[in-house]
Image (cartoon, rainbow, N blue to C red; front, side):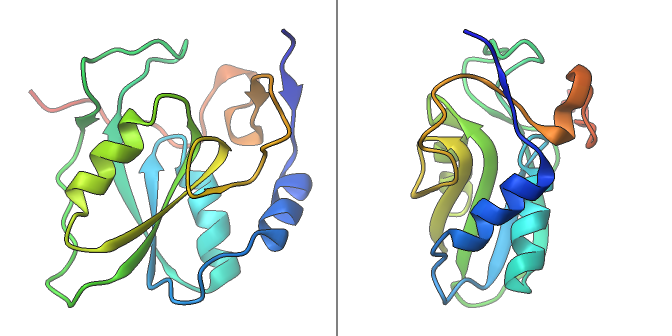
Length: 149
C-alpha cells in the first residue's frame, strides 16, 4: 500500500474542525512523533505545552521494547487535577497512549492522534500509512533522546 502525503495546511484545517473539550488545561505531546501536532493544537487552543518522551517503536515502526519506555523524567507541578489533552501522531496498538495515561493517572486525560485509535482522531478516513510533514524523507524534526541506562 502506498503512503499518502499530508501537508501542514491540511492538518491544520482538520484540527480547526475537531471538537476539542472546552475545559482542557494543558496539552502534552508524546515525543517524538507527537511533538509537532501537540504544538499545533496547543497554539490553536492557547494552552501550554509539555513533552512526555516515551518510546515504543523504532524508525521502521517495529516495536523496540516490550513496553513503551520513559526516556526522560516527567513531572507535572503539584497542582490540582488538570484536564490534559495527550497528543501523538499515530496510535496503532495503543500501548504508548496507555502507558502515558498511567503516568498521568491523577489527571483527567483526553487522547488525540492524527491517525489511529484515540478519543479524538484527525484522519479516520485515511487507511494507508502517512508521510507526515514533520517526518519528511524519513528524518524527524524533533530528535528522540536516548533512553537513560
